[in-house]
Image 1: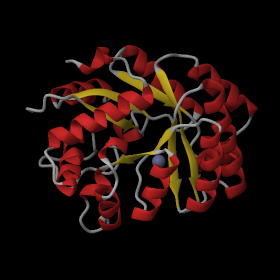
Image 2: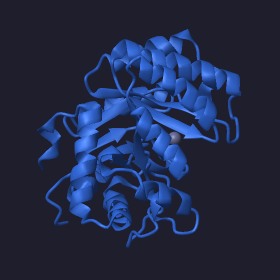
Image 3: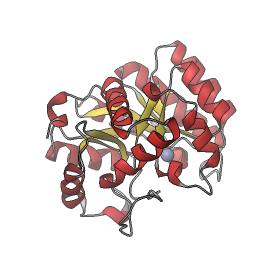
Length: 270
Ligand SMILES: [Zn+2]
């Protein structure tokens, strides 16, 4: 790897079954592949706890989020809120999320999703931490809730963005950043996203593998799961779309992630 600027992977699900027990080797390969910091995604109270515990084993390299995913919003309660708040007091837990709305299959009712999301927006306001956001087939409600939150000072990234150019533009105008996964390398299903990424300024994009999901289609060697070492392939796809060198994309995205999540520089010089 010849890139001088380390990359930051803002979305890795170490808690997923597919990655159980693999964290040490995933992290070793990520370091070899010039990934300078990783944000581990919490999607439930339990996984938010386990991702933070893992972050403590890799100080200055691994950070975590704490939140309840919209799929699990039916289980939201005051205990969850208190437990997330406790996790967010830790400096290595740098964002509230994954939280948002997902009306695609409504694993939780839309009303419960809005309730859990609203509470987590307040949690972000109370802790002053940025948001790691999920929005699928719920643009109107999501946007309305975020507009109010941003007016109150909220900041965040819409992770694994797969929407249209118009939606990306609306989020960016609102002040939110856009997280790009290997979806952008999918020439069949990713065309809408590719148009959106092309028209989004580099100073608003973040790179994320969303491992173990969404393996980049342009990656050369493949394992049965996606991993942070594949992050460069997403930077390359964005570089092609913007007609710039991949180094330019790396520098911009790393700067954006450092700015949003306040990573220390400690882990970014390997
Ligand atoms: Zn998501």
